[in-house]
Amino acid sequence: MVRKLDVNLNNKEFIINALKENKRLDGRSLLEARPIEIEFGAPLGCVTIKLGECKVMSSVSCTVTAPSPERPYEGQMSISSELSAMTTPFYESGMKGNTADEESMLNRQLDKAIRRSGMVDREALCIIGGEKVWSISITLHYISDDGNLVDAGVTACVAALLHFRKPEATVVGGEVTYHTQDERTPVPLAINHTPVSFSYAFFDDDAHFDEAVLDPTATEAQLSCASFVVTTTPQKELLTLSKNGGKVLSVQRVMDCVQHATERAQVVSKHIHDAVNADLEKRKIGGVV
Image 1 (cartoon, one colour):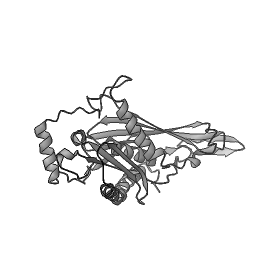
Image 2: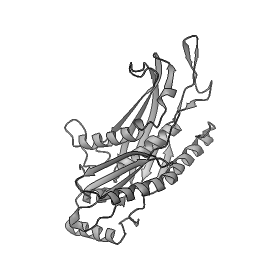
Image 3: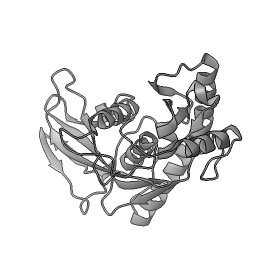
Image 4: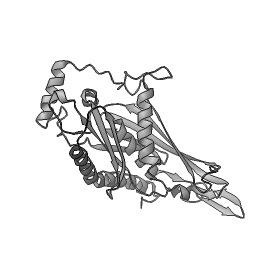
């Protein structure tokens, strides 16, 4: 972990003892997540997510490019994220900084949850087979880190992709015309499903506390010895399971986390869709199907 929060022994014991009594410093119960706040920027596909004091901004853009030879009828998608000292003073940017491992882990989680899970129908991004396709780029900026950047990042990506609209393209005789927003209403992306991520923290055996803690804060994440991330859909389809850390989780503990995540996914997904629909209706563009 790159976070180097100064948590002394007394504070650690206090936090662990509180968790044993199903209490946390911010007043939540063990399996209670912080409320998600969604703000939209002026451009379509620009979204800022607030998860407590954790803040992530995501923006989506598109360009026209040639498809890969292996998949001539599929568009392309890329996800990039940036951690800096603005996120928290303990991060150091650059090749010699200490954020490389953290950025790599976040990028892997986002790639598996969004791109590799097939959230966006990439065949629908084809303009002319074998010649021109849309390339979708998602960029995330982690503005503030108060733990659980994975869930905040996944939520930011999902909201931005639902909110984004690409120019309508018409093909006549092999020639492509790209219409501006003034000429024609931009087109939403073809979405297959809505990924929702849930992160659980676990503590070492010396703490004599074996319960899962949902949506850990930065302090809780620093004290934990393992994390377990479940990415699912409102239809209870499991997309990814990821564990980091050395603690061995029992099969029952894993199943409990999966069941909790699948039960909560519909509520979180509805919250995201409602927020996106409300903003699109204000713009008179139309909501998400």
